[in-house]
Image (cartoon, rainbow, N blue to C red):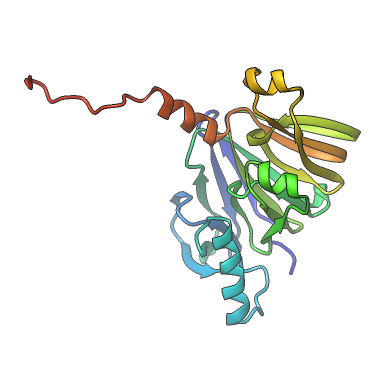
Length: 249
């Protein structure tokens, strides 16, 4: 199934929206709860799986939903379809401050691997699946466990990331990054986890014990502020006890 050819506009800077323009009959698939607003004539339906295979039976849909549950995602995705006679728009936003990255999948070999909570929305026909790290080190210490998300298709897909996003092109090169800062990568890039350095650096360097190592030829997307890092800082500086009511001794 070929993907629907949706148009889009990214709105904002620090708290971005992806506004998708749908021709009559076009559909976009999104994570449950990601929708911000939609114009008239847009109808939505919650379905099991991603809808990439319209001939998929009930067992196939349940299997697809089960794999999404392994990623910690909802069992369902929401399909938004323009049922009118003119172009209409629907918009989606990430649940935390950051950047939305539009990806023309045809430019990147029609397959991208990303962290398990990166997917925001995509043109109908995009296959949203899981893939497993084959290397023990990557699975145990990679920050995302053994499971990563895999997007396949020839249309537009949108992923979400924390803070600023940097796109790096590797040409038979190696890049080492903080494990939480990796958003996604294309085919041709090998992902592994290695020790950060000597014992002193690992204990006192403040960069963690392990680093993600990306090697090969392809494109890598990095985020400057992983949600886990932001959450840790908030918890670290949160008061240990609740405040007292005014007037209380």
